[in-house]
Image (spheres, rainbow, N blue to C red):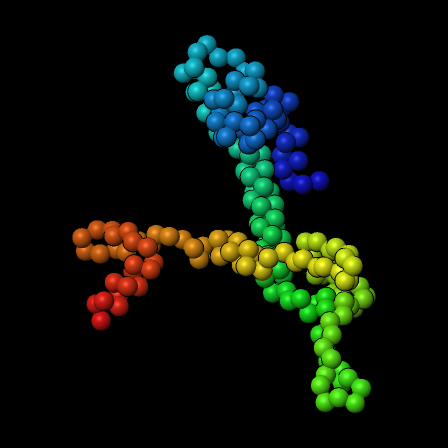
Length: 190
């Protein structure tokens, strides 16, 4: 049993509902979670104060923090999985699926080029999910892979390489400019 489940078990049903509403559907609005959990209050000011006291209770605070930490860990795991998939797609080449070669033509000094689809046993199973589409045609098979350029663009976003604005601290304050403009300005000052 997870720590957050143990912590939740120590709460009343109404407190559990408050924690659930607070962490899911109210965008961390304690007053709204207090209202939706059907706690009574004379007016909105009383509700806000009661919600604040409820949110500050040690066992409720711990339950909320446990849920948020688990959610954060799950998000990191998901981001890592997505990043690995994009990296796999961006590194993939068609030679994972095809063999390119040439063999001499009878009695000729010229080679006949060929392209052969690998047997599935020859393909690294890790790359199978990088195939977007396989289609059988009259000439053989068409294989479409997910775009390496699209995967690299997503990786650039994930790593923040495409951040448009960089802030420079100067004696007169902050100056916002694009990275390209920053490089140009640095080169102009040489």
